[in-house]
Length: 113
Image (cartoon, rainbow, N blue to C red; front, side, top):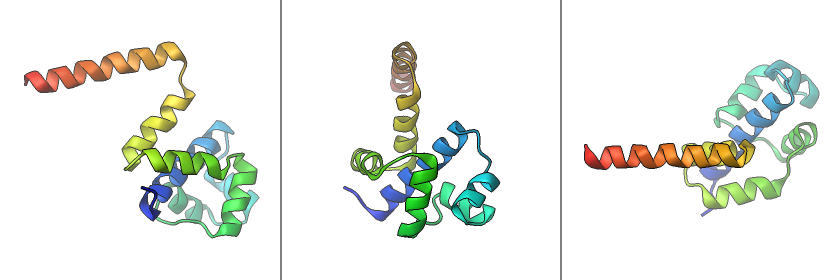
């Protein structure tokens, strides 16, 4: 279910991922969207949800859209799930396969402990 916490978690990770992908500092992003560096930090850690106008500026500068946020918010229930989903989107198929194998080993190890 989509709620404010899901949206906040997804948006915070998406902002951070896109900013880093564009090799931007928080200060550079802040200047481009007219916010303080502190405010960008609060958006990236999920403390704040941006106003709609700020969201539109962020989406334009960082090149993401609402459909990506909505999709992730519907399928993830917490920040760690969202983080995994965003990481998976950046991985090559062989990296995903290896990650699955590693997670399966961790689950088996926990079951045997």
